[in-house]
Length: 212
Image 1: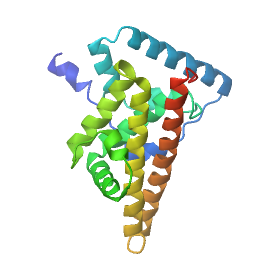
Image 2: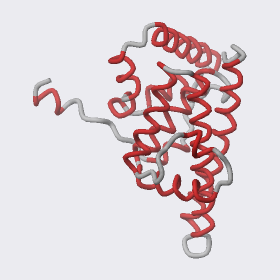
Image 3: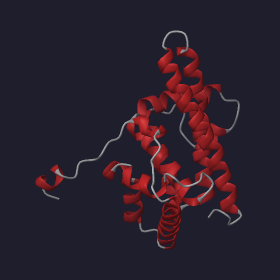
């Protein structure tokens, strides 16, 4: 790629607040049809022939193109569907890539506070810094395309629960001194907790061949 081409191919970054953004659609029936058809076609194509370069491009998609194209396809899908699961994984990845320092802070705080095996299931090293969290979420997303799909979803769900615990505890820390910041962490904790529930359910549906 020439230097001139690189100037027009810079990674598109989006703010972490996109984690809580909702995208509108004018025709829900058509959106649902397109969401399901694209999700199933993409996953079937890649898993039947998991070419490394193709998987690399899928893992790096939001770094290269941002989140808006995927949002148009999948953001309105119900949580416990294939496009809904893919959307949540990509949005989670974007949140980590956009602010890995905060992600690492939440993860370490949550790991220390949780009395569960979620940190082990998620698979991050101890301690997990920003670079390790970025590598982990990319590895989990890669597992959707070339590994055990249900295991990848379970790892993502565990990751969400660790992050949600960390966000809850940080919200408590800031409640008296920085209420706006506390509110933002509370919102993130609730969303992450919901995603953990949704992704666990999707993993169970996949194992029953019922994730549509």
